Length: 165
Image 1 (tube, rainbow, N blue to C red):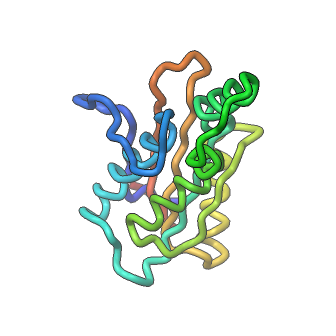
Image 2 (image 1 turned 90 degrees about the horizontal axis):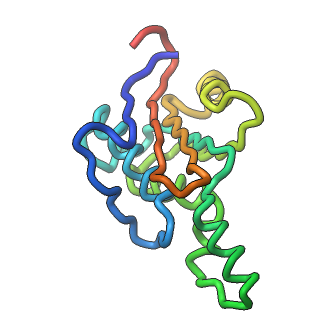
């Protein structure tokens, strides 16, 4: 497996994570978009990629969007009304699909909740997609939100078959 490009959130000089239209309350989706943009931008400059690029997205998160889940849980417990955007953003596929649409990625979109080491499980899924011919490249995004509400951290790696960097 060859690493084509990599990005992290945050990196030196980063301020707050930019918002993403259609996603509210939580930094989960904005961090996924920011780290994916950073990684893909290092490999391909600007979106969209040419049609036929066969680039998959593999999003890996054991806990998903903790902040949104907590907000929904508290709102329901208090007898409140949950806003419709929370139904959209409650599944990680929504932000993975957003990244795919923004960059014109036309490979499969896969979301994993790992039971073991997240990077190893995500890399194994990417390898399978590449080896089986479902994709030529795979964008692997790993994100976890801290349970204490501190800002999210993430890494994105663009992979393809081969060896070395």
